[in-house]
Image 1 (cartoon, rainbow, N blue to C red):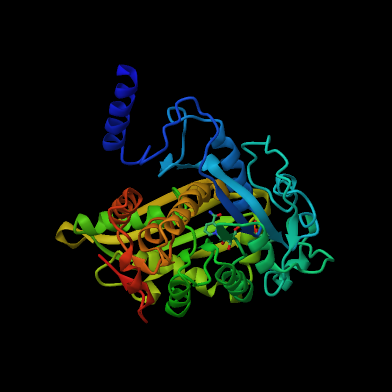
Image 2: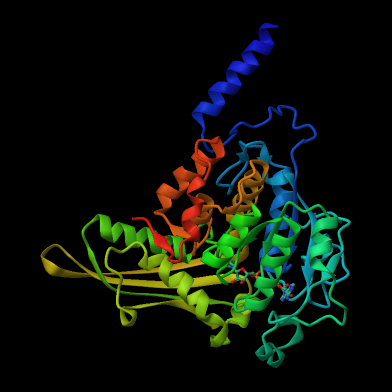
Length: 413
Ligand SMILES: NC(=O)c1ccc[n+]([C@@H]2O[C@H](COP(=O)([O-])OP(=O)(O)OC[C@H]3O[C@@H](n4cnc5c(N)ncnc54)[C@H](O)[C@@H]3O)[C@@H](O)[C@H]2O)c1
């Protein structure tokens, strides 16, 4: 009896002391069968999906003390390993028809394999509608580096979502896939499935789409995933530092190169418009007075095949400090691109499910600001983190999400 009392006491202390972990979690000392599950559907089984799925398996086998790289270990009883993939859509001949557990390792995926023991999932990858998911310039590149369209009839995505009883659909379409992204967003709406939009076609941050999700009572997180320690968050943090230390920033650039299909796809400048807006606004939104267009250049810059999924970012900031004296800062960041997005996606998915459990629909402002480059409302990163922790604890209901349906995107400084 006394022992049971102690356990409850310890659990309460634990919850109060570590807001990032164990939040209202089910007590699971023996690591027994987990009760709460998230049924996930994925559109686009490329490098990001591969890292996400490897991560889900990897974290099934790590306890909190050994666990590296998660921003939240436990979200109201949902751990990373509680996500089950139940449906997947792609268009590539080397992925469609395969089991998800095999398809994530098929070419042209080239990200680092950090957890090769992903088991068969007994979920077959279904053919999606191609729409604008395939950029024609890819045909000029070797097959092992680009997509190959499968000779298969597209499935009925809405029915697949309903039949698989998916809770959340994650969208990993290539940059520039305006039609394909809208197609999957509409399918999620029609099936009543939460939507996490990891790429830069504006859905959560588009007031018209935001209103549709609001009216349907379906939660949405977006747009364009902000990696754990990626170019965007580093550029934002340094811009904030300049501002906090009264240094005027006059000019900046952020040049990115990589060798995966994301970078190959982005060689077509026509497809890049919203990516450039998303990345540039993420930095401009920190400044009290935005830089002139001529003084800021941010975007993917080139495709270097041998780099594979390693991305290199060259960042430069020029400004003036005390006495109007010049300063310049140069930074080089080198990181495996797709695992860098996995931790943000895992938080976005779990909070989207939590919102569903709580019957909250529409754009989720806090988690979107925390994990996405182009959220409906741009909050400072520290504030966004606090808002997410409060949301998890149930201290805010994200009622503010109505704001996101206003005609103008909003920035909070
Ligand atoms: N850190 C990151 O890697 C990061 C960060 C921010 C945003 N993103 C964005 O996330 C998206 C996915 O990135 P990725 O590296 O996984 O890309 P990827 O090129 O590796 O994967 C895209 C996948 O989508 C599939 N596809 C294409 N059209 C389709 C369609 N109509 N239906 C279903 N599947 C289709 C392709 O066959 C491929 O498997 C990109 O838009 C990227 O810019 C990635």
